[in-house]
Length: 396
Image (cartoon, rainbow, N blue to C red; front, side):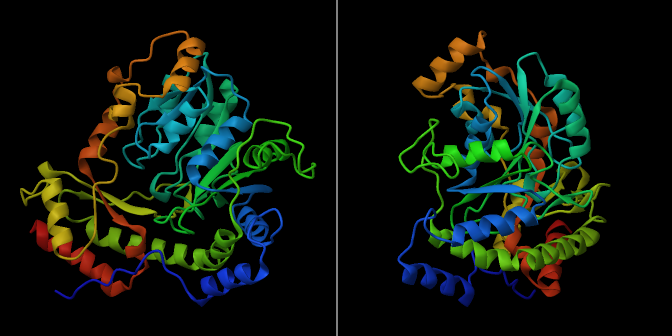
């Protein structure tokens, strides 16, 4: 079988080199005196169908700052999916609030709207839907639940630049949205993040929190809130401008190749490709994740044996998130650091015990998911055929 050509990631062109040289030559390497970060902020904000945007140092900090901007009292509950990256949960802990884990929709792997409703209490203040692997959540249902219960919605779109729900880019459908530009992401500068919103007051708060408490247009030594320094450098802003120029075309190519692979995998016993549901008008495909059910396969291979065989044949893949968040030592041991633990213990009013958490669909997908990295979807149809044939031959 021919060898697959996996595009190198992160990739760069002469445009990235030019942007970095421009910053070097300008002798203006910080964002408050430069132009690159401001230019990227404006372009990315408009692209995501938002009015306001603040670039920050990474997606984790973006989530923390966005939550701070909502002025939630310590001890409040924030509903998040149990199947996501750890930063969705740690951002909640960092502001002294309590993550409440909801199960996922077994078709989309995103947070289940029905379980959101079941987890709401009088302490709930925020829902964080995660557009997992670049696949949009059912935002109509989630926004309806939030309106019914008077809750904020913070979209974790860290894996989903360009993804659309009913033709509208994710991120600013809720009150706030956050993106990551970490090295594996679909648009990257190594690290970096972004907060978008259509609410001017929230945008000003986010700007202030990321700029050491300074308000937009305020005096340099006038600090109005307890902020931090989360500013993005001009070098990273320049790289993001170059990366952004290719995002739309790459998103289209990822979608096209993902659909082609799915069409050719759906007839294989034991394999369930990513779903296409009504409302998703664009998926960003940060990972191409399919489900493998050993009991439905004729091969007898376990999930891990299939992953090893694919890697051995040159097709890089992995398990996705191997355990639900609530089974991480952080939550089992409640290792939240002294200050956070003190705040939660005194503000929450009841004992936390994550060892009792159970999300059946999350636990199932952790045992069945197989994910291909987003850069593999930037290859040719020939490369897609190698992926398809590798899976078919391995399971035959």
